[in-house]
Amino acid sequence: MAEQLNTVIVGSKPIDNYVLAAIVLFNQGAEYIILKGRGPNISRAVDVYNALKRRLGDAIELSNIEIGSEQGSGGRTSFIKITLKRLI
Image 1: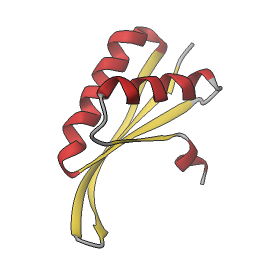
Image 2: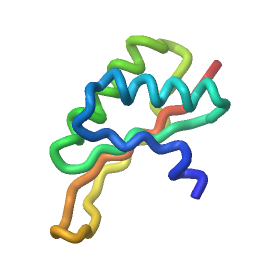
Image 3: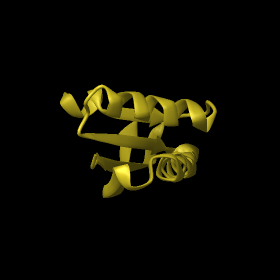
């Protein structure tokens, strides 16, 4: 349950929207956040990570990357979960 609160699901909105959502979570005291992208949004999740790294630099650390697939209503969908830890 706590994982869902710290998860930013990356979709088709502008990348800056997801960057802002992640920064807000960190500012609210989250120790870590998860960026999750599914299907065609996997590369966008990586783009969000790169934008966060450019903006926050040494304040965050890449903690874990998980890739896999999950069963959905339309079949199996690939996903990526990028876990970022707040350092400062």
